[in-house]
Image 1 (tube, rainbow over the protein chains, first blue to last red):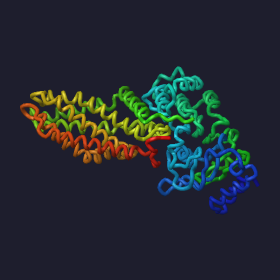
Image 2: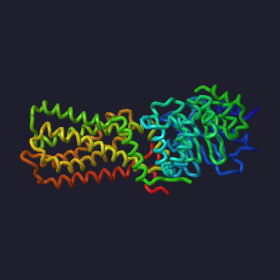
Image 3: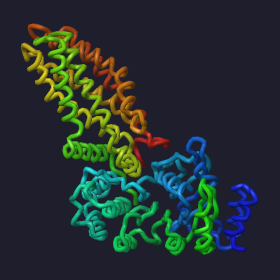
Image 4: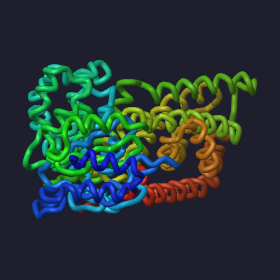
Length: 271
Length: 237
């Protein structure tokens, strides 16, 4: 029986989340990056809980993500994937548990890691009444880039084929173009940690192909990627965190330990 | 390597962004000015007076500016709330002081633009002599600073509330009572019938300045803590 099925069986048997998590990891222990000596963890989660009012959206998430690796976060709607990214982006406080990002504990040392994180959210985080170039210059100034980041902005706009539309107000651009600008914004300050929430949403296949080399795996950059494209997520990931609706952990471990079929099974869970 | 802009650089960037958006959309200042001029028309016919002086003139002018300012205060953080600006700014290595300072400065600029239209309109509607207007500028400037310091604090608190349009006037207006008392105390002397008088004006200006400093200090102390997170230190390492 593979580890995922073993975990699923024990969920049915009513095991608590902590033992499930421990079990999932213990099954994977021989090649678990979280337990073998290796590079410093860029993200460390220990017993992370997040509740909104009475409702828990993340329950007891424990995971280490080594620097330079890619973590794919899978799960159905309402599983807490975006909440997890917002906690890692320092935008949301965990209810309980310990979170460390790039060596700084959150939330007390959140200010230390701001400027080292690139966050591509559902929302583009761009002002609709400014042009794409004005938005990027504003972000460059906030990140203290030399020369208001003119060189970097020009390079990114060229790479994403947005140079010709950069002087149009964001409100007049299509959703795909806005997403490309959002990619520019997230990459502008060359972040060490990339948090990507469905990075290819709104993008047609050609645009997704343009974006891919910029957002893809890079040894100098840790990535946490939320995606509903199970095959692509597993192909790119070093680690996988699979969440069930309600934020319980179904699997946390190396990508090699989770088959695409088992990953898809997570989406069948009742909310 | 991480780069951090100085608080002043970040403040300038946010202020320039806000002014650019306002210039492009004309959402705040024209509405404030139109509201003020319309209110003067209502006062003119409601009071059935062609000439005002002293306390009544000061009250009409300052109450109108105060209510017009509420329109601007309500809109201060609209783009940040609706377009993800809060998140974008919080993701940058920027001290919260920069955001509050930029918004307060923007509000002072909006108020000065409002007054550049409202005060001449008020004088045309109600004043027999314009001699009280030049010294009135100092009073209005100090009142603007107090209004901006308090308004930004309340607006930032209310920004993520569903009842923000109600919350801002309900919380802000009581806090601004001292500003109104002091500004009206000074302005009624300057708008006195027969020309400005300077008796007691210095005392009221001192009260305004004290209020301004108090709320600027409160704003600096609380800054704008990122939602639910510890406030970063002023000097970032």
